[in-house]
Amino acid sequence: MKCLVLISVLVILSQCSAKSVKIHRRHQLNHHLGHVKPETRVIGGVDSPTGFAPYQVSIMNTFGEHVCGGSIIAPQWILTAAHCMEWPIQYLKIVTGTVDYTRPGAEYLVDGSKIHCSHDKPAYHNDIALIHTAKPIVYDDLTQPIKLASKGSLPKVGDKLTLTGWGSTKTWGRYSTQLQKIDLNYIDHDNCQSRVRNANWLSEGHVCTFTQEGEGSCHGDSGGPLVDANQTLVGVVNWGEACAIGYPDVFGSVAYYHDWIEQMMTDAGTAC
Image (cartoon, rainbow, N blue to C red; front, side):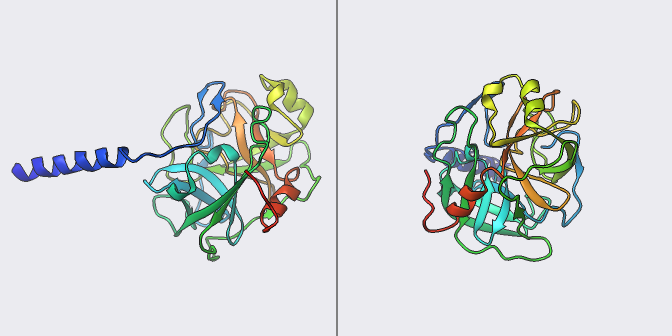
């Protein structure tokens, strides 16, 4: 009994110690349905088999919590959403090569990030960022980069686009440790603009999907990939009416930000 009491006390003390660490997070955008967490599971999806979406990563904090999704686009570069960068980079790590982020294929520390200087100017615009890993990511059967959509390109209306993520299966629900996947329909800008509650949050830098109520992204999917049938990255999860309640999901358009992304991966690329 004394041993159990001692163990309990040690556990409590370790939790208190962890919580006492001062972490100055960046200002975070308030969502229209509440405070946006950096963790944004796919609703209506299914478990991804081993090896599916080898470009998908989990951006985690060093306390072992899933923060956001992201995509490998080069040996030391991860593409994600700007609003995912709430945590200082010294408290972030990248998990690759797995469909279960609690069982990483590999982990990489973060040594830099580049956030779009016009993020959230105006609200919900330019929600895109890059993360730089301290060491090059090792490619294998379960870990591969994905090619970017070319500048100016757009899917065709009705095209099936695949969303993957570890987010919630319901609003404010628990995150899935098993990567979820779902095929969603691309809708054009005008259709999306007529369906969202606030068209001011939408810009030409966004692409949208909508299939039906009960299918779409949720908390924990933020920053994650939207991919077409040619295995091209067309979108980065930005925002939506959480979660899958009958409104479009909105993604940062990779084609629109193509030049920005390419420039930021060079020494000449400066960002905020």
